[in-house]
Image (cartoon, rainbow, N blue to C red; front, side, top):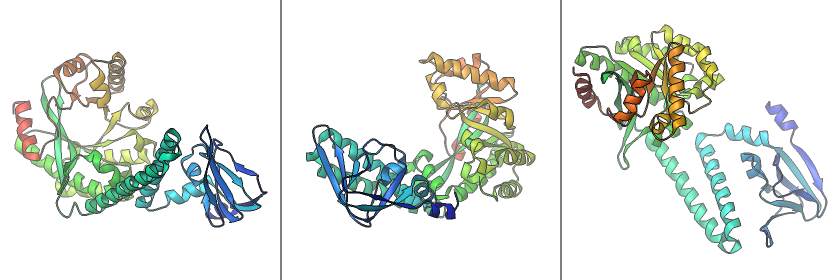
Length: 403
């Protein structure tokens, strides 16, 4: 919807005294701004009707349900002749999506806390409302402030040399030979200690910091795999995760070529790991992107297969080289027969169309042997090693491979 169209759909409506504007549990399709008159907001607690607020000109209501697509949480009634400006859901959402990442974060915090407070209010009644509201406000503020502070610290983490790349071996299961590594980012935070990527990568994605951080990881991993090959005296493949935000950057392919040229890495030693979400995102032009990467000599792995939509059309439409079975299925194989069947089916399907298979999250030898029996050739997980710094990774590759 264009800006002109958005402006055109802003309309006004009049309500007479006592007229219901919307009822509790109605589906929300708009928010309202009061131009004139008074509006009562109330909720039915079952044992009583509780008036939550009396609103006047200039105040907005109905925006929470309109934003998160939930049912109305209260009833709105005009107390006198009232004129309202209607704002449709799409107007609210388009403005939220266009906002700064930190503002979007704050809005999500507010929405989540509002819904939590609302639920507790209904359970505990009016006597606990003030305490709940105060606690929710304090917790929401603390969470938002902590996020903003973490973002500020993350912005300087590269220049302060707090970011590190650790390497988890990818092992040939038949002989426990290390054939490659996955590069995994760690943040050595001055106060919080070493942080795994799940603690901050989401924030980096939201704020576009993933672009410079991702490029640094790519360059670091390429330099290190060259050193690994020299130290081990054999070929090693380095897998590097690339996010959808990086894919969407017009400069990514030229930067990838620059990294390959400057580090001297053999591009056939580089495997770029993507998720199913990237294949679904039209902004990344995934087919052209993958083909261009393969023309440079890099290979492509589809990571965490089985956790997203897992459409078989992806495997038919995109020139993927490797399928990585998500750790959640591998870990559950022993206790859940369905997970075992899923792993077998994925493995058989991938091999049937000529893809390599890597099983993630292998924690014990029982899992390794089961994967071997079904013909899965590669794996990674704590059975072999967690992600470790460069020197330790090289030493472990020697011991695992018998080099």
